[in-house]
Length: 353
Ligand code: NAD
Image (tube, rainbow, N blue to C red; front, side, top):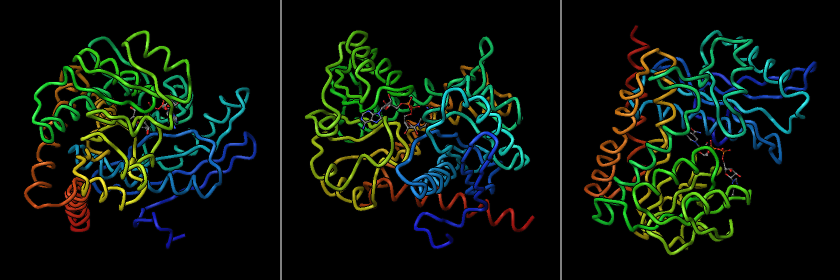
């Protein structure tokens, strides 16, 4: 296990098996050097249990990098509940999950991720207080982080098209959005308001119809969405969709979307770089949600303040793109080394205390 290719000196990995409810889950705490390990809970039906472990290990490391790069006082963690969960058992399973989170005494703070809603997290909150993404009071941010994630992605797309295409606005640009879930649909709304033309795909045809109706989007097949002749491709479904094959055939100038772990392999990132496709590192561009969640956790969650913090994703990406260009290094490697420097400094500081 300690030789797992995605094991990266994680501090703790908890395997949960609750016979009474059927809950099977993995909670991965990658780092608490910068604070409690924060990161969402994903409910997914994996083809094999090993895939769930890989997902938890990769996603929790991504959260450490994401929180460090967003300058948040939080470490990185992530949890996965192995689906499917029968609807009549869902409530009991989520309560059992909350109890498992609670055994970590605040080392890990959970929230929504793919397959998990605000209502689900409110159930988790019955059995642990180490949960976020619960609700929003007037004038405050809270509850569903997706609109903030989408705002950050839109700001990031603006930064990327400035850097790659020299364009200062999105009006008239074409964007292919893969996945019209919580974030993808809000992103379409943001992009539509800015005058971008949308091409969309989702495995759920109802989501495509909604985007067509609301935003005049053009629907295409899920197999073709990433290779559309557009300016920007925005992966907003699950991770790993930018394979080496896809990287070779992408026709857009920019890849900038919400999904975590978009690049299936490091080589896929190198191919994009060689082909002059500008890639916005996923954990930098999609930090809007966790910025909101941190506001909710700390109580410092005035909605305008959170929006301003989310908008800082733009200058952060500007700096990454500039370094990548001047040092002739691909963007995801620039971001990884910046994040590692921050984490190593925090680890050294903690060791001294
Ligand atoms: P979601 O489950 O609401 O939406 C995912 C959507 O993708 C669904 O509509 C699903 O039908 C669709 N989909 C799945 N496979 C697809 C495929 N092969 N082709 C096209 N569509 C497909 O999830 P979400 O909350 O919108 O998150 C989307 C991505 O963004 C995830 O990778 C998530 O980890 C990441 N992310 C989300 C947030 C957030 O605030 N929700 C924050 C950071 C990162």
